[in-house]
Image 1 (cartoon, one colour):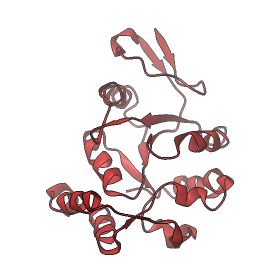
Image 2 (cartoon, rainbow, N blue to C red):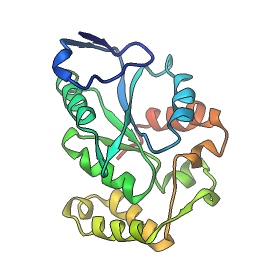
Image 3 (cartoon, rainbow, N blue to C red):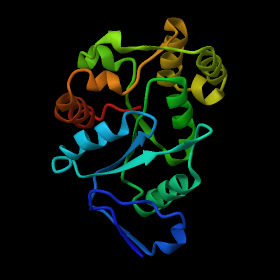
Length: 196
């Protein structure tokens, strides 16, 4: 089976051994947390596809980790296209950071949503969601990890979450109107290579 990632939607097969060839002319791979408002994001992201050819992979989490087939597919993509950046659009939440850490071996960069995006992109600050006790406990646990301590962006974002006891989800960007995502936020993030 040949997998053509130039088409608008490709399903990752359960058995990657069935895939004999992968083709793409994408500039980057965009990973999106499936728990976010994925369907709205998918519709809006399709609108900037011609300007920014990309592969979008929606990450289904199983206990805070990407599903096995998704992880294997991403490893295959990294081997096939070693110079193609993998960028993650995940919530500024302990779960979002946990997902980024689970993808660490793939050199995934955090595109957003990050707490420093609010000032840069004039995102409203009143769209935060209170953290649960479980979220706060996870954030504190992640802050103890050496990988987080060595990464000032992850460390600062987690400290901000704990201090404010709140998280910001991708809906924050959509709160400015759906076109903001594909006309302003993502194009500027990509143009200035604003990822960590």
